[in-house]
Amino acid sequence: MASSTSHRADRAAPVLGVRALNRATLARQLLLARAECSARDAVTHLIGLQAQNVKPPYYQLHARLRGFRPEELAGLMESRQVVRMVTMRSTIHTHTAEDALTLRPLVQPARDREIGNFRKGLVGVDLQRLARLARAFVDSEPRTMAEIRTELLAAWPDADPASLAVAARCKLPLVQVTPRGVWGRAGQVRLTTLDNWLRGGGGGRGSTGCDASPPAASVDEVVLRYLGAFGPASVKDMQVWAGLTRLREAFERLRPGLLVFRDENGVELFDLPDAPRPDPGTHAPPRFLPEFDNLLLSHADRSRVIPAHLKGRTWRGNQAYCTLLVDGFVAGVWKMTETGLVVELFTEVSGAQRQEIVGEGELLLDGMRDGAAGEGPGGGVCFGAVTG
Figure 1: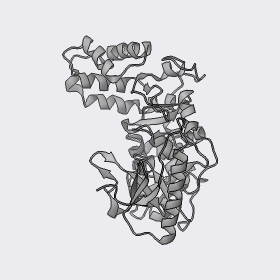
Figure 2: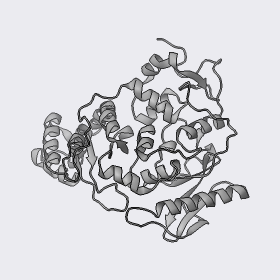
Figure 3: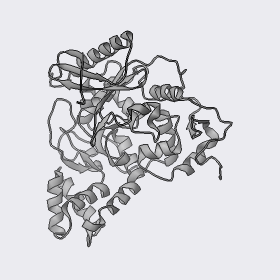
Figure 4: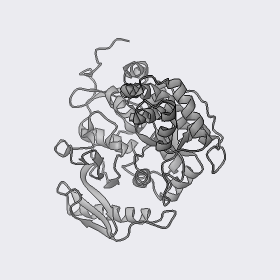
């Protein structure tokens, strides 16, 4: 299995330039042309949606699906066909129930390592007992993180409360129960275990019918799915997306069935033979993406989407701005206000591109106005300062 291409590709491998990588990735991400598929199928294809905040998954699907309306994803949340939970990179994602059940075990080693960062606050704590106590507590009824801390602190009064809560979150597959995450509804973060929620526990609707104890997804299977949604990509790219390490062995097992390229820096990239790789000159319409969109977070080298001179412009402290793609690359940021959509451009755009931005912004305003509660922004699209 030994290979001389652990970092740098065989010089004979075809080179994919930045624009080629950009168009291929946009095609996989359903951002070159809106897809004619259901929200559920899109969440499956994309292997989940980054969901640190409540609204971003809805905006992500609006940018990717033709005719999407927020109530479609809201209905999936309420029927428990999709759930919000910590998976990739120790961040909250919206996954289908099936993916939540199989992906969480895959990333469990990373969650176990995360607990190690809090070991000073967990001296004398039996983690297996902690998991049993926390499971019984949250499965009796959904609980807030503050309630979980208080319950565990009664068993280990000398431990650090925050470390106890982190350990519970890492040891157990906890989901945020509805109405949290449902468009047009407000709800405090309350948690129960994934299998309890899918079997109908915690109130609300009954069981989804999912097997609550399926085997973990195989690494090889997830590599192929990642390439289908984010490729062409390097081993390091996938490790950044998943928050996992030591994935080289899986790529080497799969190498005979994959195409191999290299980027302009000589880094080896893998891809599925039948995956789309559009011409670099393919038109890419403007797209409004929410904060923490996985398009911007799922590669070690983000230059395929973020120009080098704009690195750092989409963040302020630890908060990400909503981003605007023009010609496939980040070109500005945006925000919703009571009077409409404000766009701040980082680069010059043509008159035709500006018209496209306005048209896409108006589509966003219209789509997000049709939430389950009939709420949403009004007004129109204007150009101004967002980050000042």
